[in-house]
Image (cartoon, rainbow over all chains, first blue to last red; front, side, top):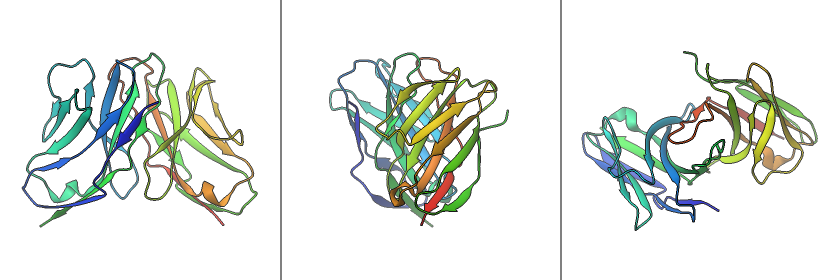
Length: 116
Length: 114
């Protein structure tokens, strides 16, 4: 079974500062993918970034980067130069990479608030 | 390309009733999955459909059922509603491929059971 743990229920960050959202995971499968999604108050889950378990380099997507430490089973999201529009819930999720398996296991999320 | 659309956006039912939620998948996607997100929680996987067949299910009772149609749209049906069924129901579609196969989510249907 897979498990995702997000230990920060809420975070407050000054605008333009960088922020790190923590995520640890547990799985016995060697092939898996890690995802971060943003959920604004509208409810839609917006994909941010992906890291595969065999990827050698940390993933980056614009202001988002994923600090992947496989030995520690952590996949922290780093947002650089935060903006007011970054205020939202953030969820870490994982999926075992078997063909046809679309099941994502989510953490409980972190509510990020950007302060002007 | 159009994204994932869900209907209705909000609905209120009473305990014991039945509800049907609908989802149109993103163009080019053949796999649909449904998630239940209770207030303050992360989404929980209900089931997924591929080529009109259920091919994966989470820890939900049989009164949660679904359909996928030839155009890849989908329905989630919940019978004998209970108060704990109050949640945001999210539909997600994907191409069903392996690797970095990103699920595209809709904005959800918020169900309140009284």
